[in-house]
Length: 322
Image (cartoon, one colour):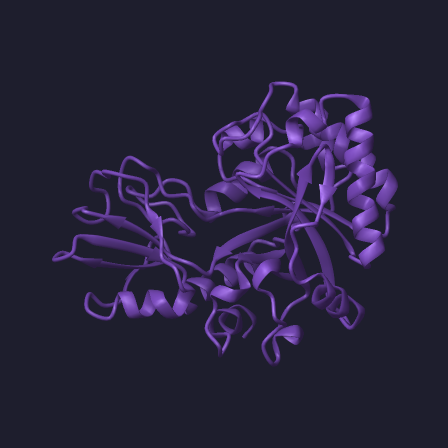
C-alpha cells in the first residue's frame, strides 16, 4: 500500500517525528523544464534533500517534474532530439542525486489551460518520452505520473501504451470543483451538486485501462474557498481561492461557521451565511473514508498535496495511516 507525500522542495526542512514510518513514498516537487532540459537549478535546499535521500531508510524518494503552470514540455518533446535531451537530463538528475525514480507532472499534455504551450502532437510525443525515460531509468526505478481528473485529460493520453512503462498513476482527485457552481473540491463520492469526485475519476481511469493496483487516489491537505456565494450548488462569481496556511488556518477560518460534513460525498466543508464563504477541504473523517475506499476497492494507495499543509502533530497524515 502506497502512502505518498508531495513535498514542496523550497520549504522542506525535514519530516516531523514519526512521519517517515507513516509514509512509503516522498515526491519532491518540482524539477522544471528549462531550455529543453530537466533542471533543479532553482532549488534552494539541494544539500538538505541530498542528505535526506542518503538517510531515507525504507522510503522511496522520487523526483517530481512539472507542476501547474510549468511549461517547456510541449516544445521539448516535439522532436526525437528534444525527447532524447529531456529524458537523459531528467534521468541524470535522478540518478546523480540518488532518487528512486521520476514522477511526471506535466499539466497537461495537449491542453494549454495552465497557460503553457500545447499541441495535438503532445499525446503521442509524451508516450515516446515516457518510453525513453523508462529505457534510460531502468526497470528497477519508479516511473509514475500525476494525472488530471477529467475525461479530457484521459483523452489526451495514450493510456494503454503509457501503462506499459508506468508503475502507477497519482490521480489529482482534488481541485475538482467546477467554476460555475459551488461544490466540494475533493469529495469521494458524487452528489447532485458534485459530479467529479475521487470515485468517479478512479472509475474513468480504470475504464481507460489502468489497473486498480496502479491507481493512487489523491487527497488535499489544503482548502478551497468560494466567496460571495449562497451555499453548495449556488452560482459562482469567480474561481475558488486557496486558503494559505494549510489545515491549521482552515480550522481557524471555520471557527465561527463551524465544521460541516456531507455524508453522501464524504467531504468536509463550512459555510458562513454572513460572510457568504463556502470552504471545502479534507479532514480526518474524509481522509479515513478515502483510505477505507482505497482498501475496499483494491487501489494501489493514496497520495496527498502537500506535506507542509498538515499541522505540527501530523493530524491529517495520522488519519490516513491509523
